[in-house]
Image 1 (cartoon, helix red, strand yellow):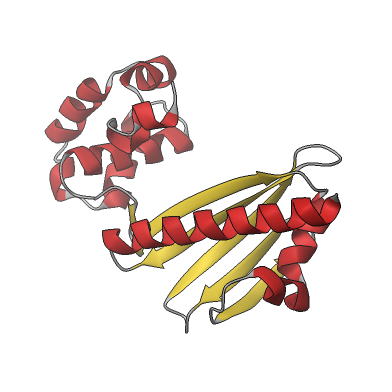
Image 2 (tube, one colour; image 1 turned 180 degrees about the vertical axis):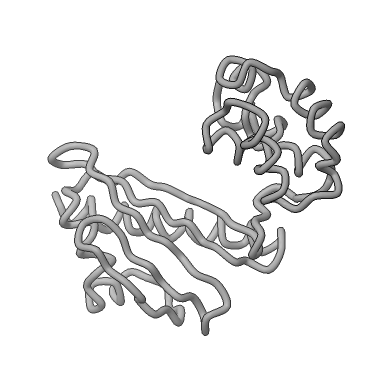
Length: 190
């Protein structure tokens, strides 16, 4: 199922996928969690109920909890305990080292990245960058993946956004920024 078709499901996961992986549908999980008093629990409390009483993996415990919180109005889409989050990815037809260098080398980054105040907190060559964004208001994880000798992917995950409106603004910002980077790098590679 395409991502846009699952957006209307809790946690963006279809009922069929939940049933296949956990043995129960969303509605069955909601009945179980309602009976356990989950509507009055925090995220960790709901996860604990699932952990103590049901044989589902840690990843599925998290997804079931997020889906429940969204369905019961305890959490908005993209909301995390410390704010909102958005993730945008782009596959670019250049080797991984070229893509990482465009981000990791400050002079290279200045040639294409919009003027924003960022601080690189941590860099792991050809794997990731951790950024503090605009005066420590939010943070960004940039992750890099090889997709072959001449193709790689970058994913920007922006954390601690203050509201849903900023999710939309930053999704648009990152989509445009990554498209610009793709065009620049692919044109330079020719």
